[in-house]
Length: 189
Image 1: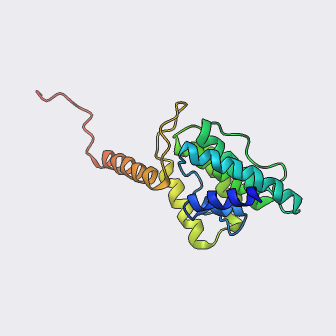
Image 2 (image 1 turned 90 degrees about the vertical axis):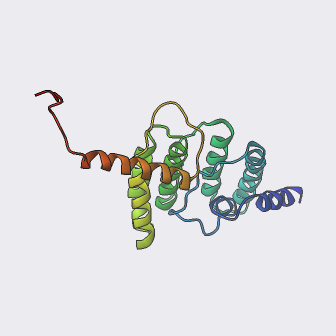
């Protein structure tokens, strides 16, 4: 019973949204952004709640795939490591979720190969997406592709911050294309 009470305490501390839906295993969407920056204390509590829910879900005969994905998110918040994508026991929809989340986690810290996983996840998710979600994800991924990715992790950012930065970068790049090109720099004649 203590585990059940702890899970409710963690649920109360989490903002309603994608991570809560992964923990409960209900109404999760491939169109959501799951790479939410978490404070270490909340991440540690969420990791414990995820482990408890995992055991309960297995005993109840339900699929624990969303909990594996949540565990990956929490572990990334705690130590910056991204485990293997959740694929070996996942169905097609869950496999897409695992790839998208892996890409989101890497993108949140501007790490390579974020776009590889986001693109793969998008291809896998496409058959399961409503039209509006399809085009929203397509637009988000196009913007995220403008970000500079590398081997050194940046401070974790949420989706709105990443999209704002990417939009600025894209506008600057487009601005560079509109400037006249003067190959001859000699101004004296």
